Image 1 (tube, rainbow, N blue to C red):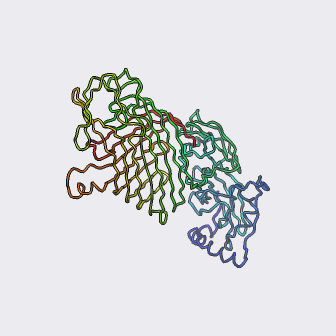
Image 2: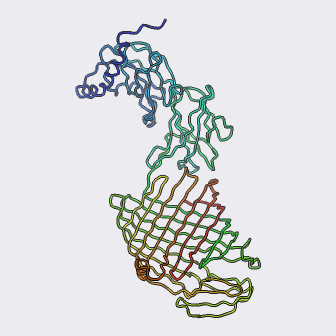
Image 3: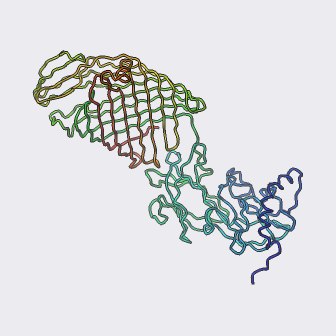
Length: 549
């Protein structure tokens, strides 16, 4: 026969109103020094240890708790096991299957005298540890910990937090917890705490709690606080460690990234000045160095990129007798300072430049008549190109383009989204060193254009955006535009033909493993307004990469 309810139990609705006022009453009592409850506690097995991540012993938690218990009531107290509690951890008190009260670990929960069921932990009721309790008027019932805490940190071999999906499965009940996909912000404790009933569990990477690979068996006992550091590499568990404290992802104002890579590329290029034009399967090398300081108000960045590739496997011009020639030869550098008012937008100054390190040569597939004209339309060269010979189009470091600018800019860099925009006045210098660009070929006639050096003032604008999806897919796009002073008439008055000088680069990188990625690049540009056609390139690369730091 179930125990009879007291009149206080039958007034559960009134009790809920009383408990909502306890915080206010507690503040008054704390000020007056009043105490109206008895305290009796259960000592923790780890009492006296100096591990700061563990909570104080139950007796000390009771002494520090200022919750007021009304006359005629008792209280339930469930000691906390960790000093840094999970905000979702709670104690649900049930009466005949209905929720009577919800409280926090480490704090008294005032209750009418009677028999109750206490559910401790996080998540749904069925996932919590359950205990039958008896509350006596005027006394505090201390519930011995009926749960354990398993706090999990996933790190790489260098101790850096990793955003890996994982699941925890209970072997005794078949219940699964998760899957979890942690994503921690700078300054945040990079771990997840699971409040679990005692029992045997399996931790597994991925979403399958029954996975045999990349899984670890764990035994959780009541009152235990287990800190597991799971070291993963390329999506596989390398080892597990017992950590005294969870890893914290610390914010830093410094950014340093240096990537080295080797590429196998299937690409196509059209109207390029300093690289191969046509389709080619190539082998190449790539490196990028990014340095930065971001204090919120002050942003200073420097970057250097070098991208090289040589053809030797397959090319569309059929020049298999010329197994080595450069296809891609792109070097870019930029320095930037941006003072952002309120950390949002403000004045900037920058300098950027790009060039090619090696000479650009044209390999004649057949005998050709090559006619070179200047930008005024006058013939400056009329010569014969012999089959099998090579002819220089641009020297070392040609073309060389340098641009300096200042104006107003902003940059936002979040966990998964990046955006920047700036615009202002600029000076642009383009040096071609009497270099020539191929404009057309008709039969055995090859037409070339000799480019003049350009030094001009104008206005510039840059827009950049990027997204990162679960640390697997990165998409970045950047558009740089420049309008010189000699182009304003054609731009605004429709005098002559306007040819924008711009560069638009887009990259999408899919991470296949820690050191392997599939990369697609698309580039549209015009280096000088003398060029009638846009310069186009796109490629699909299988990249073997390594991050130095």
